[in-house]
Image 1: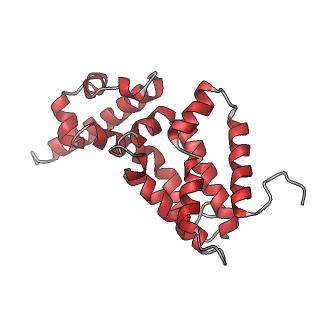
Image 2: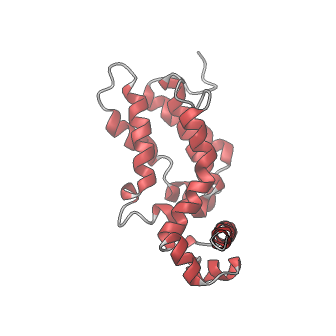
Image 3: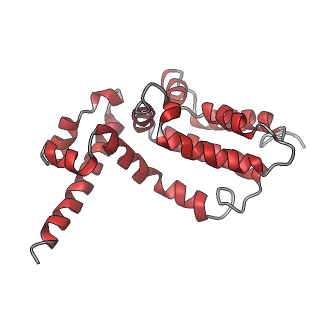
Length: 199
């Protein structure tokens, strides 16, 4: 019986830490401003609890990002069209990119923090490899497309967190405009018509 209490406490502490980190990253001016000490204080736990649960700041950011992204990943892995695996590739690729853009717009500082964890390059981050693999595999289903690896990189570049932050933050480009611009760019790359284009 005594073993259950630590597990409950650990689960409660983890939830409190993720909630506190979520709030801090949402409200911060820069993701670099959020420290482990800030998160521990906001969650009402000791810093040692954070390090035991997540290893380090990068581990905590990854855990929070994964928790936030879970509904999107479930839709991609097992959901219906347009994100699910049974969707035709010419429809699925734009939908995947739109979902990723919307996620980064809704989680701008968290996405910036995560993409800054890939050593000297965001391309080394684990989440980038997952999205690249997914896009490349979807593009591979298109006949006569030998450049799916590069095309996946090029399309993902349009959703980089630093670009999203620059456009949505500094340039104040409206969300709908960004989504339409990404759809148009994707259509150009794929050689299809963007939504709203004359047939």
